[in-house]
Amino acid sequence: MQTEKQISSRCRDIPATAGIGLRQPHHQAFADSKPGIDWVEVHSENYFEMNTPPFDFLVKVRENYALSLHGVGLSIGSTDPLNKNHLQQLKTIIDVFQPGLVSEHLCWVSENNVYLQDLLPLPQTEAAIKHVVERIDCVQNYLGRKILIENVSCYLNYPHNEMPEWVFLAEVAKRSGCGILLDVNNIYINAFNHKFSAWEYIENIPKQLVEEIHLAGHQQIQAGDETLLLDHHGDKVIDEVWQLYQKTLKLLGNIPTLIEWDTQLPELPVLLAEAEKANSYLLNQSEWSLGG
Image (cartoon, rainbow, N blue to C red):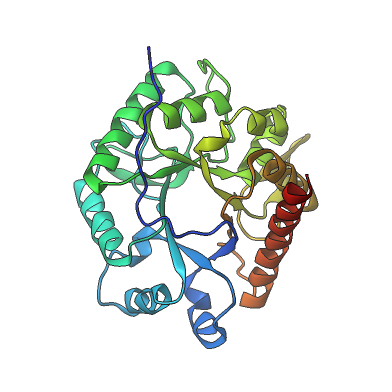
């Protein structure tokens, strides 16, 4: 019988407030304005090269802001061997920056050591759970700390899926001892595209596993007669996702929340306004909890 594994986190300095994904085009504006937020998140791979301007910039940011590292290239679900060089570089920047959270996507991005340009979902099977849990164990043991795994957007269903996505995600986290980075926008997208209940997904994730939330924008496209949603991280969070986020906070409590914006980047104040909106939901949840 599988049991839930317990692994402790280090440097848990990410507060239950809203942060932003800090991208290089915003570096100068961020340095000049010194925004009044508590934390930022960056893509780990962008800082593997030490003693470069981006790396030196992040060193300065880390003096005043809590930091989360979010990876896109570890390919935790691939059948390729884990990339030792990637892991070594990740461990190096973890040791340098001492981030509060470290996360990766629950997906595969490489085959035969060829890296693909997408975050591809895994089949939701018992065999896939065992495979990914073994790899997460290796990663966490090597890094000496817990990681979070993020649910990804999915545009196809494997015909041999054995369970809903939320069961798959929760089982991987419970058996490996990792945490969950719950992307509410991705849940909304997958629920719309694959005709299931986004709320059923969220209410079946054990709340003690969720350590971070992502919010982002998406786009709607027409594919023949079918309307689809695509996760493009290039717009404001829509009202329906904000509503789902509010319900999520009422269920799970306040959780560090990141605003992601990776394409069609706006001016920094637009991104900060989205974070402020998330903070208003977090504040309302705190007041509701106290009042209740």
